[in-house]
Image (cartoon, rainbow, N blue to C red):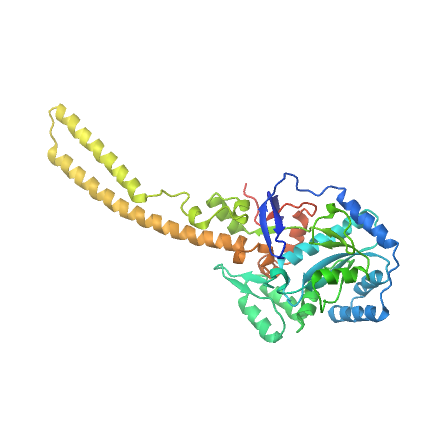
Length: 427
């Protein structure tokens, strides 16, 4: 099944004092990065190529020992040596440390990093390695660390393992997954890769699901914040780009790799698309906070249902009285018949008004519940979906083909927020 993507007139913004993102309307029409933006990566690569990189043997050995804990496949070690000996360039993909379950924003950054590395290799920059790096701390810049799945009733379950009793976590996860045709396969993969160290656990999962020839993993940071650690490693490994930290159009930053915005997206499942259609809502209106559930639930209903029924009753009764007057002009006086008809109509409309009011209230209640789920799916916990939802949620519902479908439709050179529709388009 092929997914669909629609680029929305939104962009991801970040508060100056917070890593938390919000979605806002684009102030300009152009969304694609100019081709000239890639020139900055090439310039940075030439600059790094003139600098002799040679990592301290003890530090290199520590990095290789970390890799052995994750995966003993030789190509990951070879990719690391390419970087530590200055024989290639790294596209850095920061991920959250201390939380095992990969989150959607981490997946989007990794997909963008893989695509950027491919683009740079095509531009003959040299050997380009995608370097996954656990360096973002929980609590740093409002990072919650949440990595959640959503139950069918719309409730969120945080499944981000942060260390502790591993068997208890797996048992909890087995009970939390909604239970689909892919749940047993997913649990088997998780059980095989499980480790009490959440960073090792996540690394094994990411290398399983992103089995690329030119990928390797840097060990987690232990002290300092993201920016200081990035500058520290920039002096030791030839880092040409860092995904998710800004735009490359601003030139070459001093003392750190060229930023690349990555990709921002919201996954729209079939039922969510159906609710958007039912209520006449555009995804950008929901994501930008312009639509409200309480107003949308009554959008297609009369403001005052009893008043509408009463107006119809008065119209019908008036027509019947005019009919009686017309018949009297002809010399026919059906007083008993008209009185009986008026009484029957009056009673019928009273029952209709009560039924309509009850149905209207029921529809508002149903609409309210559906809209509540719609907003919860698109803005879980009031935050952009990618900063809350775990990759495990989508692998459980859509299986291993989910990542391939996502990779096929996303536009990695576009700064606009993208809506990815998972259901097939109706004819």
